Length: 128
Image (cartoon, rainbow, N blue to C red; front, side):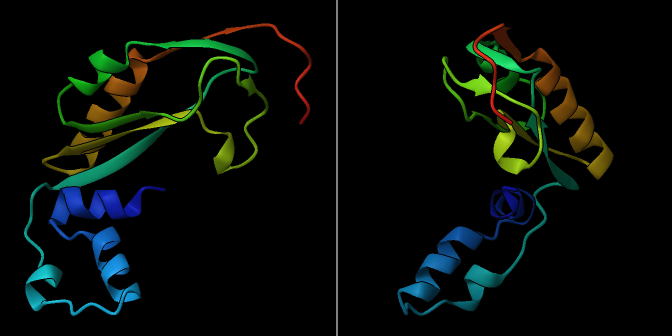
């Protein structure tokens, strides 16, 4: 997920913008297709939590300020019933990071993800 955002972060190519321009029949210049190395690696670390009722999410701001982090997203709001992780739509959020290499980007992303806390409580049984 978030491939277009990673491409823009690492290479400077706005894939989402290009797709919209193409869909609208707009002319795309070769400059918009040119890459420039902005980072040696980029990654997305997806966020999950144990099953239960989501009461809140803590430390997103701290994660956003972490080394290499370009974006932090929480997909769910309090009151969301967290079930078993079976497919991508069951994820709770994502951290995107860049680094001098793929390994460095992953280290930064995982370190930031470890700061984020999903507060949960036992709730009504979750349908899976």
